[in-house]
Length: 81
Image (tube, rainbow, N blue to C red; front, side):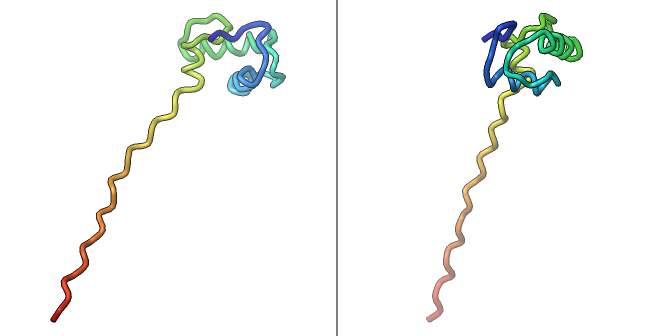
């Protein structure tokens, strides 16, 4: 996936929100500059475009929660005679 000049939509709005650009949903010059600055500040290859590397840095996959161990129900006490 590559987001650059001319890209539009919800993902562009998310990117604009992340980099502090005006949120319009349309990739413009300000979005380009803000993405470039984001890449520079985070040690990424500076292109001003959002490729897979930059996208994964901006929006890392959510960590999967560890499975909780199943609760063991106590056995009922033996009945007194």
